[in-house]
Image 1 (cartoon, helix red, strand yellow):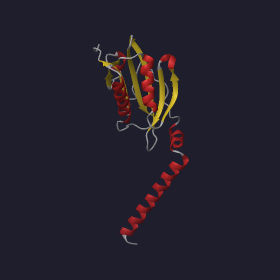
Image 2 (cartoon, one colour):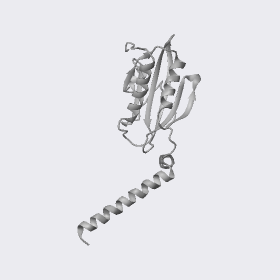
Image 3 (tube, one colour):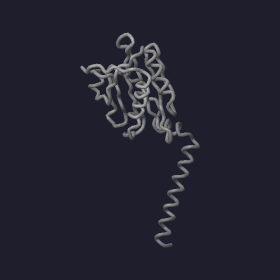
Image 4 (spheres, helix red, strand yellow):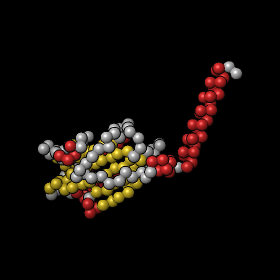
Length: 183
Protein backbone atom coordinates (compact mmCIF):
# COMPACT_ATOMS: atom_id res chain seq x y z
CA UNK A 1 0.00 0.00 0.00
CA UNK A 2 1.34 3.39 -0.96
CA UNK A 3 1.85 6.05 1.73
CA UNK A 4 -0.87 8.18 0.11
CA UNK A 5 -3.44 5.33 0.24
CA UNK A 6 -2.46 4.55 3.82
CA UNK A 7 -2.92 8.20 4.81
CA UNK A 8 -6.29 8.34 3.03
CA UNK A 9 -7.41 5.15 4.82
CA UNK A 10 -6.43 6.65 8.18
CA UNK A 11 -8.25 9.92 7.40
CA UNK A 12 -11.38 8.04 6.30
CA UNK A 13 -11.31 5.96 9.47
CA UNK A 14 -11.00 9.09 11.60
CA UNK A 15 -13.84 10.76 9.68
CA UNK A 16 -16.01 7.66 10.19
CA UNK A 17 -15.31 7.69 13.93
CA UNK A 18 -16.11 11.40 14.20
CA UNK A 19 -19.30 10.88 12.19
CA UNK A 20 -20.37 7.96 14.38
CA UNK A 21 -19.65 10.00 17.51
CA UNK A 22 -21.69 12.89 16.11
CA UNK A 23 -24.62 10.62 15.29
CA UNK A 24 -24.42 9.10 18.76
CA UNK A 25 -24.27 12.57 20.32
CA UNK A 26 -27.45 13.63 18.53
CA UNK A 27 -29.23 10.28 18.95
CA UNK A 28 -28.55 10.08 22.69
CA UNK A 29 -29.53 13.71 23.13
CA UNK A 30 -27.18 16.67 23.31
CA UNK A 31 -28.61 17.85 26.63
CA UNK A 32 -28.31 14.37 28.15
CA UNK A 33 -24.68 14.06 27.03
CA UNK A 34 -23.71 17.27 28.83
CA UNK A 35 -25.66 16.29 31.95
CA UNK A 36 -23.92 12.89 32.03
CA UNK A 37 -20.49 14.45 31.47
CA UNK A 38 -20.58 17.52 33.75
CA UNK A 39 -23.73 17.28 35.86
CA UNK A 40 -26.85 19.45 35.94
CA UNK A 41 -27.00 22.34 33.47
CA UNK A 42 -27.92 24.93 36.12
CA UNK A 43 -24.95 26.39 38.00
CA UNK A 44 -27.20 27.50 40.87
CA UNK A 45 -28.18 30.83 42.41
CA UNK A 46 -26.02 33.92 42.15
CA UNK A 47 -25.53 36.42 44.96
CA UNK A 48 -25.65 39.96 43.55
CA UNK A 49 -24.98 41.32 47.07
CA UNK A 50 -21.54 39.67 47.05
CA UNK A 51 -20.87 39.04 43.38
CA UNK A 52 -18.00 36.82 42.36
CA UNK A 53 -16.68 35.80 38.96
CA UNK A 54 -15.67 32.37 37.68
CA UNK A 55 -12.09 33.45 37.06
CA UNK A 56 -12.48 32.24 33.47
CA UNK A 57 -13.43 34.16 30.36
CA UNK A 58 -16.76 32.37 30.13
CA UNK A 59 -18.96 34.67 32.19
CA UNK A 60 -20.34 38.21 31.94
CA UNK A 61 -21.61 40.58 34.63
CA UNK A 62 -23.71 43.70 33.89
CA UNK A 63 -24.77 45.86 36.83
CA UNK A 64 -26.17 49.34 37.38
CA UNK A 65 -23.59 52.10 37.13
CA UNK A 66 -22.16 52.85 40.55
CA UNK A 67 -22.92 49.47 42.17
CA UNK A 68 -19.84 49.16 44.36
CA UNK A 69 -20.18 45.39 44.95
CA UNK A 70 -20.30 44.69 41.21
CA UNK A 71 -17.45 47.06 40.47
CA UNK A 72 -15.34 45.15 42.99
CA UNK A 73 -16.17 41.97 41.04
CA UNK A 74 -14.98 43.54 37.76
CA UNK A 75 -18.28 44.37 36.12
CA UNK A 76 -18.21 44.04 32.32
CA UNK A 77 -20.75 46.76 31.63
CA UNK A 78 -22.49 49.42 33.68
CA UNK A 79 -26.21 49.64 33.03
CA UNK A 80 -28.43 52.70 33.22
CA UNK A 81 -31.58 52.97 35.28
CA UNK A 82 -34.83 52.33 33.39
CA UNK A 83 -37.87 54.60 33.55
CA UNK A 84 -40.37 51.98 34.69
CA UNK A 85 -41.41 50.13 37.82
CA UNK A 86 -39.49 47.03 38.88
CA UNK A 87 -42.16 44.39 38.07
CA UNK A 88 -42.54 45.75 34.54
CA UNK A 89 -38.78 45.75 34.04
CA UNK A 90 -38.52 42.19 35.35
CA UNK A 91 -41.28 41.06 32.97
CA UNK A 92 -39.47 42.66 30.03
CA UNK A 93 -36.19 40.92 30.89
CA UNK A 94 -38.01 37.62 31.38
CA UNK A 95 -39.72 38.01 28.01
CA UNK A 96 -36.38 38.65 26.31
CA UNK A 97 -34.75 35.62 27.94
CA UNK A 98 -37.77 33.45 27.08
CA UNK A 99 -37.35 34.38 23.42
CA UNK A 100 -33.78 33.04 23.36
CA UNK A 101 -33.41 29.62 21.73
CA UNK A 102 -32.97 26.88 24.31
CA UNK A 103 -34.13 28.95 27.31
CA UNK A 104 -35.51 27.02 30.27
CA UNK A 105 -36.48 28.80 33.50
CA UNK A 106 -35.17 26.98 36.56
CA UNK A 107 -36.12 29.48 39.28
CA UNK A 108 -38.73 32.22 39.28
CA UNK A 109 -38.95 34.44 42.32
CA UNK A 110 -41.42 37.26 41.59
CA UNK A 111 -41.51 38.30 45.26
CA UNK A 112 -37.76 38.92 45.16
CA UNK A 113 -37.94 40.32 41.59
CA UNK A 114 -35.46 37.76 40.31
CA UNK A 115 -35.20 34.65 38.18
CA UNK A 116 -32.67 32.17 36.84
CA UNK A 117 -32.71 30.40 33.49
CA UNK A 118 -30.55 27.95 31.61
CA UNK A 119 -29.98 29.04 28.02
CA UNK A 120 -28.36 26.55 25.66
CA UNK A 121 -26.24 27.37 22.64
CA UNK A 122 -27.95 26.45 19.36
CA UNK A 123 -25.67 23.81 17.83
CA UNK A 124 -23.92 21.93 20.62
CA UNK A 125 -26.41 22.93 23.34
CA UNK A 126 -23.78 24.07 25.85
CA UNK A 127 -25.72 25.14 28.97
CA UNK A 128 -25.25 28.67 30.34
CA UNK A 129 -27.01 29.98 33.45
CA UNK A 130 -28.50 33.48 33.36
CA UNK A 131 -29.31 35.15 36.69
CA UNK A 132 -31.41 38.32 36.84
CA UNK A 133 -32.37 40.67 39.65
CA UNK A 134 -34.39 43.89 39.45
CA UNK A 135 -34.80 46.59 42.09
CA UNK A 136 -36.76 49.82 42.15
CA UNK A 137 -34.37 52.70 42.85
CA UNK A 138 -37.00 55.46 43.06
CA UNK A 139 -40.67 55.67 42.07
CA UNK A 140 -40.79 54.78 38.37
CA UNK A 141 -37.04 54.19 38.13
CA UNK A 142 -35.61 50.66 38.26
CA UNK A 143 -32.27 48.89 37.94
CA UNK A 144 -31.36 45.44 36.65
CA UNK A 145 -28.43 43.15 37.45
CA UNK A 146 -27.48 40.45 34.92
CA UNK A 147 -25.00 37.60 35.19
CA UNK A 148 -24.47 34.85 32.61
CA UNK A 149 -21.95 32.05 33.02
CA UNK A 150 -21.05 28.85 31.22
CA UNK A 151 -21.30 25.44 32.80
CA UNK A 152 -18.74 23.87 30.48
CA UNK A 153 -15.26 24.94 29.48
CA UNK A 154 -12.98 27.87 30.06
CA UNK A 155 -13.93 30.22 27.21
CA UNK A 156 -17.26 30.89 25.50
CA UNK A 157 -16.23 32.99 22.48
CA UNK A 158 -18.17 35.89 23.99
CA UNK A 159 -21.55 34.10 24.06
CA UNK A 160 -22.47 35.18 27.59
CA UNK A 161 -21.63 38.83 27.02
CA UNK A 162 -23.54 38.84 23.72
CA UNK A 163 -26.56 37.35 25.49
CA UNK A 164 -26.53 40.12 28.10
CA UNK A 165 -26.12 42.76 25.39
CA UNK A 166 -29.25 41.40 23.68
CA UNK A 167 -31.14 41.90 26.94
CA UNK A 168 -29.69 45.39 27.37
CA UNK A 169 -30.58 46.44 23.81
CA UNK A 170 -34.12 45.11 24.23
CA UNK A 171 -34.61 47.14 27.39
CA UNK A 172 -33.16 50.28 25.78
CA UNK A 173 -35.75 49.97 22.99
CA UNK A 174 -38.64 49.63 25.44
CA UNK A 175 -37.78 52.07 28.20
CA UNK A 176 -36.21 55.48 28.59
CA UNK A 177 -32.89 55.29 30.39
CA UNK A 178 -31.22 57.45 33.00
CA UNK A 179 -27.47 57.23 33.44
CA UNK A 180 -26.75 57.72 37.16
CA UNK A 181 -23.53 59.25 38.39
CA UNK A 182 -20.95 56.63 39.33
CA UNK A 183 -19.91 56.44 42.94
